Image (cartoon, rainbow, N blue to C red; front, side, top):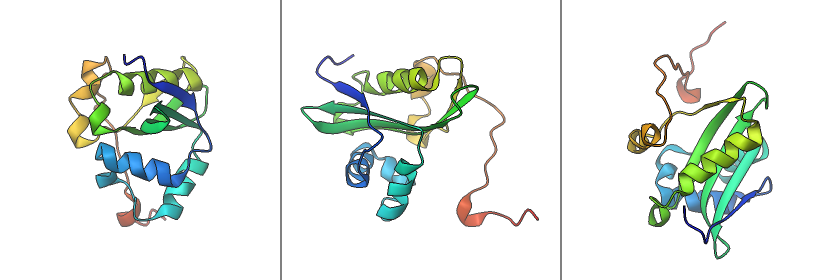
Length: 141
């Protein structure tokens, strides 16, 4: 793990900083970075926001929603491409899981470019995840 990285729980992380690291991580390809109000709401309603900073600059973030008892959905894990392969993502996951409670099941949907990363750090795939995308949601009435 990189020793010059400062990690913190940052519930007041700004949308601008979050968008910036999403862009530098490539996660912006799958997040509404052109809608800052939506990004701000994503942060405001998150239960856990863990950050990684180098010299004060945000280089990584984990954003999660949790019941702090049974499950924790790690909805965003972003690490600046220039800082990847230094253990920052692994440490953000570890700290997120610790904040949620180690008895919780940590759940995430992998970005296509990161599919090979998660087994490498000991996460197991799950074969029955189902989604309804907001933009194309069927009327379930």
